[in-house]
Amino acid sequence: MPFTDRYGLPLSTPSARAAEAYCRGLDHALAAEAEAEACFREARQEDPGFALAHIAEARLLQFRMRPKEAREAADRALQVVGGATRRERQHVECIATAVAGDSPGALARVRAHLAEFPRDAFVLSQATGVYGLIGFSGRLERNEEQLALLQPLAPAYGDDWWFLSQLAFALNELFRHREAEQAVERSLAGNPRNGHAAHTVAHIAYETGDAEGGAAFLSRWLVGYDPAHQLYVHNHWHLALFELAAGNFARVIDLYDRVIRPSVATSPPLGTLADAASLLWRCTLTERPAAELPWDEVAAYAATHFPRAGITWADAHCLIAWCAVHDVARLETLVGQLRDRAAGGRLNAGPMLVTLGDAYLAFARGDWHRAANLFQLARPEFVRLGGSHAQRDIFEETLIEACARAGRLDQARAILEERLDRRPNGRDRRWLAHISARGAAATA
Image (cartoon, rainbow, N blue to C red; front, side, top):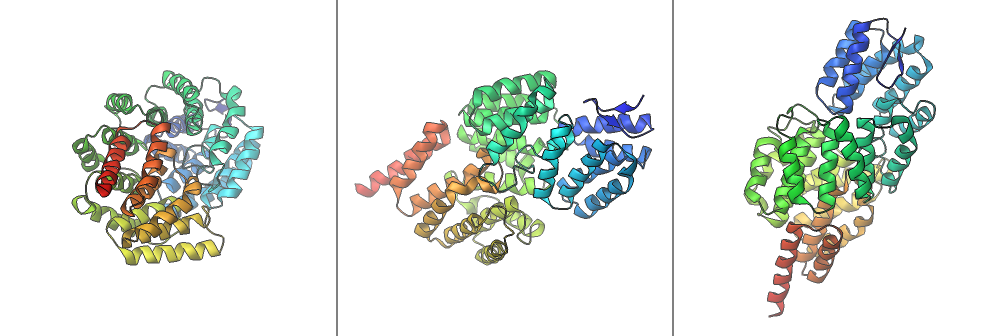
């Protein structure tokens, strides 16, 4: 009898040990756990002809920003997949296309493959979440596309804990919070230590303004969570946001120093930069001047790991880091590179990213009116950057501060009031009171 994964899909390997290691790796990968890479490596060592093990390792290497090793692993998968099943050949082709850097082509292959093999969870996982092929597509309708991909597949997965965590996240990004809560509760029931489900709980709490409940959940859930796991730092970032909303600045900085800052973070570079830069910038906007925060490390990390434009999410956070330290030269260089890429049709986020770059450059120069105008111009398309609502809030928050510094206090208040209507938040309430007090003082 052939070996199968836990979704009932055949595995083309004669080795029981290779099949068992691959199945462990699949579960670890779907739970965002660090053991996945070692399991896939063990599987392909047990059976060098096991293509699925090679391609799974390739994708994880790509996520860890080890592109040369990822391409080599993908090439090995393509070389040995010929004798495998049609499902496995297509599986390898989908992921190899992504590893090669052709995200639109990979997404097209994924959609076609899932129409035939809906329970191929690892292939589906390439298109889910904010860092997936849809999340980083640069399309305005990406949140709607994410849910449209997942919902028709729900009958094929039933109570599968991984699928439910992804469905819950997609529902929450479309503000369908009650449905998201129901799905994530089922996911946690199936696997209480599922990092994706815990992450979605944090997002639901953020979007519904439940900072106290979110902090309580994560404080309990993170006990014993392996620092090597994919979501260890990012879930602590969410905990820091809840502490910031509650006004606990000392706890925010403690979390930053212990878990999030680049010198201690265990995430790959993209996540490390995004979490560190966005958290410190929030603190800069409402808590402390940039000079009193450890920005130099983040700015240097951005320059080392992302020296040229090319990854939209990284580019957006490099703008933040270099704005914070007033590195106008680096900002000018990056904006020039973005402009060149836009002219060549090589920006997923389109010209909006150039506008965002010009906005941060104006902010760094203290040209508050120009910065506010440019942030406002880019605002309707922030979704094209990638990330979640919670992550992208930082760009709207910079617009608020630019308006305030430009003396456009009514505009700043209007945006904050709109945010508070959508999502009650202690930090926004304090910020609104501060801006209102500035307005009152200006007219006294």
